[in-house]
Length: 300
Image (cartoon, rainbow, N blue to C red):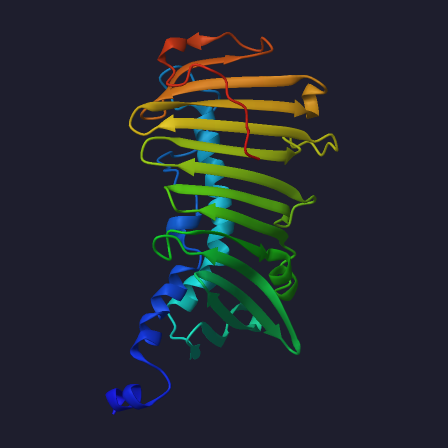
């Protein structure tokens, strides 16, 4: 009977086979999070030579934070992956509505034209329906190995679920050669007194990694309104080692810029560090650095 319906109905076998292409155009943990391994047990004081480099620890912590934000939106995307579409046409799919947290009815819609996939997730509560996640994906040599952008309005879900959380997440990505991400979090508030904003960029191939991020906020956590800007660029060669350069302006540094640099081996252990304001003595061997020169953030 099923074969008869497929042969005689309006839908062909290719429509069902194309479901995989539509799903490949959606964001995934593998392609749109920061793959920065964390084998640390916790934070520590400023490292001595031979111990875990602080800026490695900071970069790992930062990557975990942005990944956690992205994981929250991927939960609803992954759920859609587990469901068959409720509607199919040659160039569109629809999933739902299905029940999600906070009593929301969620629907997902996708359309494609000439290798371009537009998609959106919307939630309905009572008579109000609002799009909270949406993006565009451009297929590459395969659908998954393409590029695109998506936006997640965390504030809308926070309002519906009465959590008080807010924040707008935007991700630009390019998976055609390795992993390339630019992640911007604007006005994030997880229940804190003030909103904070972050910007991250990652470019990673088999030969090299480059992770850059910027944070603006009260780094001394003393309630001061004089925010500091912290920029960190971490570069590494897999299996060899890397270098991190941090730049801090504002806050307790006023108009001065403080530059703190560390080099580290393949296990993230400190081999050299120095800084620009004479706050502590240089230590280790500068010739151990995989990258000999200071590098500032240049993508964000």
